[in-house]
Amino acid sequence: MPNEDQVAEQVKDEIRRLRAGHGVLTPNLAEKMGPHLRTLCGVHGDAAQLRPTLIQHLLAFAGGLPGERQDILAISLAIDSKIGHLTNFTERVDHLATLLAVSNRTALRRISDAEGELAREIAAELSRNAGGQRFVKSYYISEYRAIVDNTAAHADPATVVVHQERELICVQDGLAEIPIRFELPEHPDTPEPMFSARVQHGGRIKALRRLSPTGFELVLGLPSPLARREPHRFGISFTFPVALIRAHHVITGEVTIRHYQLIVKFHPDHPPAWIRRVDGEDIRTLDAFARRAVAPSGEFALDAVGEANLTFDHLGPHLAYGCQYRWHEAR
Image 1: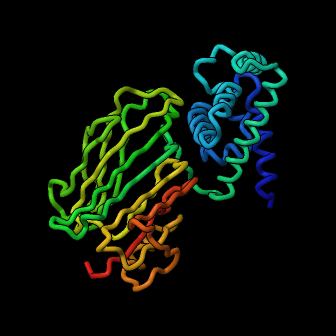
Image 2: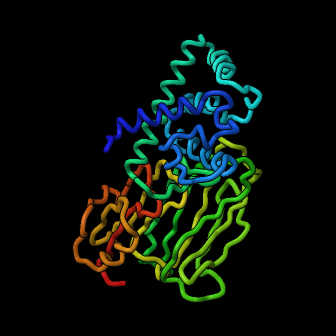
Image 3: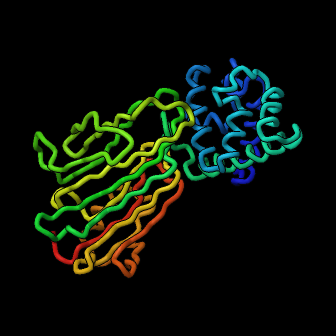
C-alpha cells in the first residue's frame, strides 16, 4: 500500500487537475475529481451532489493552514464566491498576483506550495480514517475551548459549571443556527431539564429539547446568517447538579474539530483519586473504567493549583477526547 507521502503526492496531482478552468465550479466535476478526493467526500453521483460536499471538505482541511494559504486555495480553486467571474485558472493567477503584489511566477509557486500543504492534510486524514465517514457539514470548528469547574462539586448544592467557547468557520452560505447535542445519561425522565444553559456571547438559545432518554439538543441562533469562509465565535455556560453527570468530561465530535483545549479545575480539598487523558477512545469504554481503583491508562498529575490542562488536534469523528477521573468517595 502507498505510504502517506505517496498519497499526498497523488492528492496534490488531483488538486492540480481540479484547479483548471472553472475549478470547483466546473460542470463536469464528477469526471475531474480523482479517487482520493472522492474517497474523502464519500459521495457518489452527479456534480450537484459532489460540489457542496467537496467545497466543504476542502475548506475544512485548508482550515489547518496559515490564513494566506487558505486565501490562495480559495482563489485558485474558485471556491471564493467573490471571484466567480474569473472562469479560468490563468485569470485567477493574475488576480492572485495582483492581490499579493507579486509576479505571476511567484503566485504560481505559492499556489503549488499551498496545494502541497492541503494535500498533506488530506493524506493524513485518509491515513487516520481509512474508509470512515468524515463529518464536515455546513461548518467546522477551528478552535474549541472548555473549562470545567469542579470546585463546587462537594458543596451544597453540589454543582459543576462548564464554560464552552467555540470558533466555527462556515463552509456553506446562509448558516443561521447551530445545533449543539450532548448526553446526560443520569438525567431523570422529567419534563423540564434539571440544568441551566446561558449564552455568554455570540447568539441566543432558540430551543432546548430532549431528543432521547439521555440526549439533549440546544439550538443556538446566530446574530446573522454566515457566508462561506466567515468565522464566528460564541460562548455558552452550563450549570449541572453533580448527580446528573459522570466523572468525566469528553467531547465526541459530529463535525470536524481542528483544535480542542480542555481545562478542568478541582477544589484543593477534594482532588480526584486519579485522573487520566482520554485521547480518541470509544465512549463506551469510560463506564467500564469508572470504578477502577487506579487509572487504566493515561494517568497524569494535576498542576500546583489543582488544574488539568489538555490539548488535542485533529479530532476523529465519534471518538471521545478529554479526561476521566474518579472521586475518592463513592458517588
